[in-house]
Length: 147
Length: 129
Image (tube, rainbow over all chains, first blue to last red; front, side, top):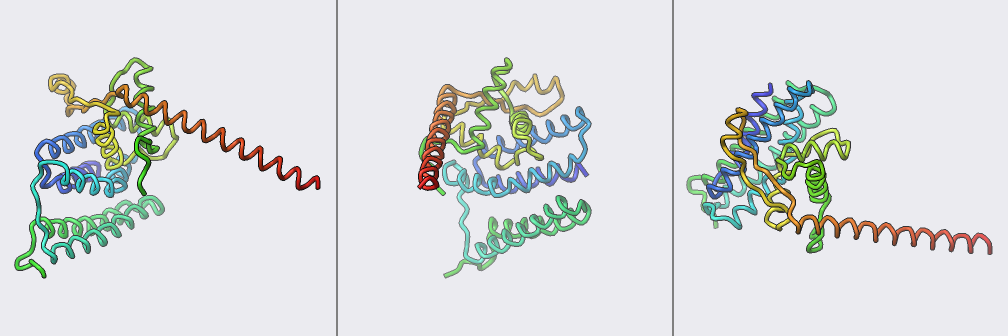
């Protein structure tokens, strides 16, 4: 389970650093890699349990700040400019709304009901929606240039 | 909500305070996970600070000159078979900003106490009347 959550964390970082300048992208990815290693090592050293849930919480609770940081970094850094046709914008908005809703449900399930398997299923659906929407937004859609 | 220029938000105060606590213990620099652990221990929070919240704050604080960072030597990390750490250090500007924030908080607390005393005295006058 720990490996799965760490993969999710790394995938999320790869996603929101897409299109950033090489330095900002490499720095953030390396910093999260280091944090994940330290967290795992610390949990092993202190014998603390629930590492997967703790890492998952840290990833999910930080997503709004990650998105904001990514938007700011695109504005200030030498990143790749990404044009966004109107259909892609709608895809992005829908994906963020549904993805966030599923993430919130997953968080609630982990926190309140202690149902990690169900929570991970819900999280998976949310993640797929979010990734699909972001991919559509980043790559654009055929003929999607709107009025 | 926009914040006043030069003022610190709570996560920045906690990071600076943790950084100075490390320095007081003879450790001049710290990495992200370490500061998250320190903040958790200090605040008694159930969870560590979220990745996005922590690293966005560290990035912003470095740009504001409150912190400076460097990547540790690759050999040091390789010897311990772990990824390289990005090490942060509180700058003199960061120290001053934290001292200013503490002064502002004390002033606010003193103003609050004066207001409480004035309110109590007024209530006393009204009750006595």
